[in-house]
Image 1 (cartoon, protein in one colour):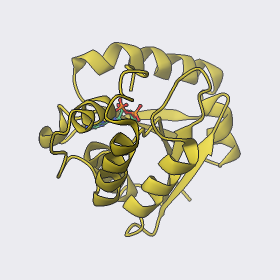
Image 2 (image 1 turned 60 degrees about the vertical axis):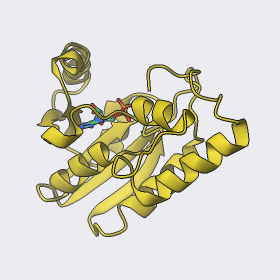
Image 3 (image 1 turned 180 degrees about the vertical axis):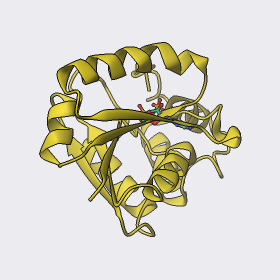
Length: 171
Ligand code: ADP
């Protein structure tokens, strides 16, 4: 069985992520979408909220599972029996960092291959941080994130009066 892990912060999941997940699910028997627990970052959504939103976004895909992990990605991937790590690439600017990570991960475990998938053109500009910024300023995010995420973002910024964004520029 060919298993791939698609890791990320998913704070929150966007239509760009979902596009990669759907395309990857056509190539692998099982895709595990893995939310990184990173205590050094200050995300907008908790790990549980991010997992929940992902689960509702992928419920139409029978071979996609959502999980969360901490520690080394290759250790997690090996425990899951995965042979591939999927990464999405939006622009040249993503490349340098991803190239470095893929090289390090190959050094740590040469049996796990990193596969890069090009973003679909319509999502090339899309990131979780851009979505949070637009939502925090009251802009329309319809079509950029799944419906459930749109609802939760609106709720989040209503709670905080729209000023919560900005703690986590990296995402
Ligand atoms: P972001 O950079 O939006 O905060 P994550 O850290 O959650 O996203 O990224 C998880 C993975 O999804 C990474 O491999 C990232 O390059 C990829 N990704 C993010 N947004 C897109 C998009 N719009 N199209 C394709 N891949 C994407």
